Image (cartoon, rainbow, N blue to C red):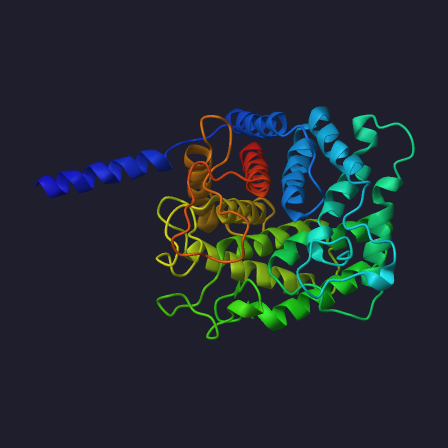
Length: 379
């Protein structure tokens, strides 16, 4: 009898969690609180490498959604600090990308190109935010670098899963900025190469890079090891490019098919509390909460629901659980976003991730998810 009572109590608790009905105002307040907390506590602008750049993609999502001048100015100041460039090597014969690198020569390395997403967004929104004067310099380097890549013969630029989020949206934004379909052609060529080295057809998920492909690499239990944040980058990338891709693009259906298959695989391995573990199909590899992958999945799935690609009846409960985790567990009383796995590339057994694990990119991913959830409530 006692056991039945406990089960009943647990069921009631779960029901009460699921019954929480968020309002637009509540979510808007969370977005403002998280973003203002970050900007107040980080007045000095960082370099234009991937991790602060991911924060700025989240900031711009919130800025454009709520027409917030202060948030616009914050990303503008970041652009000015970095001279509206990623890596700054001028001589294109010295540009690198085939190996990880943080030097100024790694101009074609995707981690130095994600900044162009924000620079283009700022450029496009300049009139709406009362920007006076010539803003062409905001996108001059983006045009120089990305046109070089688009017209090059190489197609092996994106050899790790993160690169799909870093650069695929740059390609669609460059197409919209210039009208040149060469950006879409190169995006497809690069994506095909990525699929050839790290896409798992059986599951529809992406290994982080070639080093982690099964069976060459396995979890401690001998299972396939899909890193949540890595797959989060990919799902979010699909959402971003489908938003900007022309309806008549020759490869649009293929992108959608990959996106839907990945979305199903992602939904199937969500944990009961709403988060995804760092090794998606083997929770015991690195058990416990993780926010960055969860936020990217929340964003990518909610976008698909909001735009008619995913069935609301099937996927909205998944997103609701993810949002509940993000808003009530990951979000800390001081306005920071915790439980973010530090910079890395895999699920690490024994690595401590807790309330104080706060990062710029984790905050940006949270803002992406929150803004898309707000749109869901607005509809």
